[in-house]
Amino acid sequence: MWRNSQKWKNRASRRPQRKGEALIDKLWIFRGLDRGRMTKKTLLMHELIGLKVKVVKSSHPGLIGIEGYVIDETKNTLTILGTKVWAIPKIVAEFEFEVGDKKIRIKGEELVGRPEMRLKKR
Image (cartoon, rainbow, N blue to C red):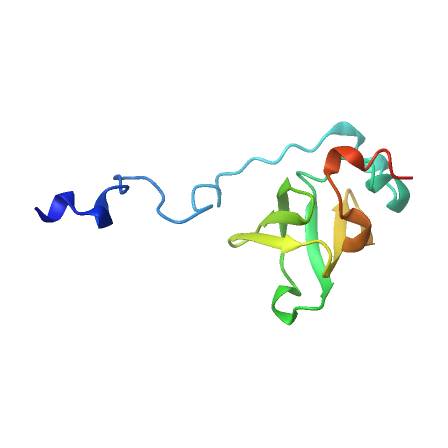
């Protein structure tokens, strides 16, 4: 009887039980060959997924200092994989992207919008 309760219905052995747990320490980040040619101006037109990022300024003090790799991007958030998976709102933060040996700071307000539509914004 106890095994059939709703509490244990979705549980499976050897599967992660928390969101993003499977990604930590098992993610391989692709870094394209053109990543070294990015500047602050051209970063807005490039793919952000796979870049190393750090939150350097935010209106929410709990978000400052989060660093890791961008694993997903939506219209209003960046999903960052660090010690855990974070969904950071773009509008409230300032990000520092590490591209090669350069560090590029960008306000999140400049990144707001669908990633595929950033090319049309100039």
